[in-house]
Amino acid sequence: MANVLVYAETRGAALRKLALEAVTAARALADASGGGEVHALVAGPSGVGAASEQLGAYGADVVYVVEHAALSNFERESIAATLADRAKQGGYRAVVLGFSTQGRDLGPRLAVKLDAPIASDVTEINVAGDAIVVKHPGYANKVLVTLTLSGSLVVLSVRPGAITAKQAARSARVESIQPAVDPSASRVVVKQVVEGAKGRPDLGEAPVIVAGGRGLKAAENFKLVEELADAFGNAAVGATRAVTDDGWRPHSDQIGQTGRQVSPQLYVAIGISGAIQHLAGMRTSKTIVAINKDKDAPIFKVADYGIVGDVLEVVPALTTAVKAARASH
Amino acid sequence: MGAPAVKIAVCIKRTPDSESRFRIASSGVAIDEAGLKFDIDDFAGYAVEAALQINEKGGGGETVVVAVGPDSVQESLRKAMSMGADRAVQLKVDSVPADGLAVAKALAAELKDGGYDLILFGKHAFDTSAGVVGTATAELLGLPCVTAVSQLDVASGRGSARRELEGAAELVEFPLPAVVTIDEGVARPRYPSLKGIMAAKKKPLESKPAQLGAVRVSVQKAELPPERPAGRIIGEGASAVPELVRLLQSEAKVL
Image (cartoon, helix red, strand yellow):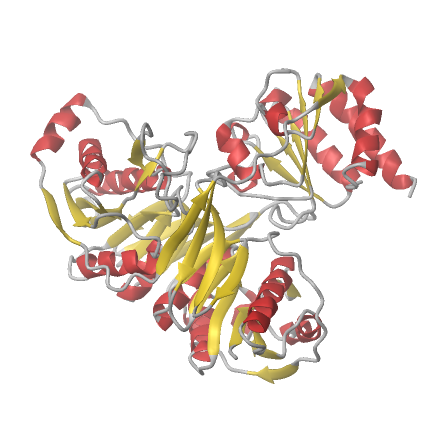
């Protein structure tokens, strides 16, 4: 029997979807390790402890709450030290994180502090005797790798969207703890935060993504993408590398091998030819729609539903139809 | 009056061309490398360029490229020197392990007494996309670490950078020495000139065994993921929109 420690990532004071996915992964791992406990650690400004109830509902037995004014920013040095301190209290089989910007930063720090092997961006976790066996899609999702980790404590980060968050009701015991290192003493000082698009879900969490490419012909036509995203109501907006390189959209919108890797329920590719660099970032989407004027574009090879046509004509029609469909139910 | 000279290490990885069609080797635990084109990983290439630009702007300084790898990695180290790096270090292994912490330990052992002001990595490598080695090396060395940096400047013993987040960015400052992992956005890597290629042949490339320590992560199996079902075109022009909406509602159930 061994416990699993999970980092419950927040944005502002709200739990992220990937935090609940990580808790679900941790719950399954604890159960498979002979019925241990899941201990979640949540860190943020005063009030972040309100997330404890939800963490319990998804399977956390204990929630450690770290509240500090300076944690309104993600203070990685302090959070890594606090997680490592907790993990060293003993009895843990694994520390589980989401493979997000935060998890990418915390995972390797924890691996060093705990001298524990680490596997990143995993989509499946299994126990095989004394080892933990994980699956990781590598080579831009073109090769599926199964990794074996030895060691009594391991660090695992879970690909967002790969594991479906499931309720597993517990009434979590809540314990308040202090940060192990003063969060206001970080050596890396944030001078300014450059905010991205407001009012839309993040690309990593949105159930629907509408993305545009060069086929839109001009930067001002990107508003067609925005309007379709608005029609869906819960959509994020993405772009190809060509579009972000040309400055039509910020770099942070880029989907592809060198940008964000996404797997939404629905991906709508508008005026995107489907270069391998782009496909690497979205081919794991559940349903793919493509609208492009070139019937031979590679995007149509992966699109569940393709429409050949001028995006300037088809997209406004789709926007109207989606609005009507959503209004009718 | 130039800025003080900066000594920079750039840790690079050699990876196959990302546009390749991959096959699995007969061992079942690796890709078949036959016929694949290998080069400096994309993000590591940006890191080499960033280092060269900092030292060109500052004057003086030194750029050292370091890689853990078998002898084939020497070609990538030579290429970095043909771009302008001053010397290279190969930390020799038979193959690069899947254990990022072990690789970081080998790099930290090499870098710790090197007197480097700045240690650069790509934000992650194409093959694993794990992004473990850079941050773990920083942690092993006890240095500040800034990840996914798209702009980087060094002046008066301090660094300033733009760090890319999910849907946002931060402008940060940090003391040197530090570890920085490089995202796109810094200038595109230059092509080696003929003069650079000739000069690189005479630059020092030191090869020594990597001090990996225990390797605790290993590949049990590599396989090709299931193919997506072949795509289908449902129609042409705006007249196909009603059918698309019907399919999204009744078949895909996403609307």
